[in-house]
Image (cartoon, rainbow, N blue to C red):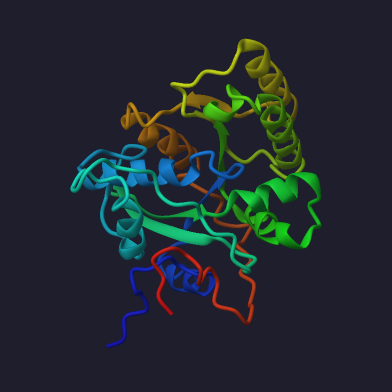
Length: 267
């Protein structure tokens, strides 16, 4: 019998196979380059496989285990000091890499959760011009996600480029606000051991209140790994029961295999 899963990151065609049980819950991580989106995901995955709950549910499998482990290898303390996962490559596809976990809660409810792991350049381009060619992947995410995690880079917002970082983040918040349609949103102050000055945080909060008034705010840092899982869990919990009808995940048919440039992929 042929098994339709390789353990690598999913492409959009693979989502059809998940539909047989129930429409998967799609969680989008949104943010500029190097904000810590992949680190959030890896931190949550490592907590899950150690037995921690995610949104009150337990890990019961993954169709992308090879992809998860490829990322997790960068942060495990096996040889020398851990490092952060490598930058998600831009590639040429218009859909993101998709990472899957299966979860089951205390009531026996099962969910397929699919996370987007997309390059930050997509979102930066989309924030400026949503019709740009290299913003197509961000458009797909904004259209189909059940919940969003917006990741703000505390290090960059408190560093020498803080003015530019604030401007770009506000642009992204404004753009997402035009597409959010009330879907659950979590605003994550990542790398929170690096705190921006209050004037910058206040300016960003004003934008969030204006464009994403329902967003929940949370902090995370790799110095406290449990905060990574908590941040991801906020979005999963909010989207645990997505609408069964009225909105479908539109899966484009394209010639290229989506996200073949995903790190760890070998052609």
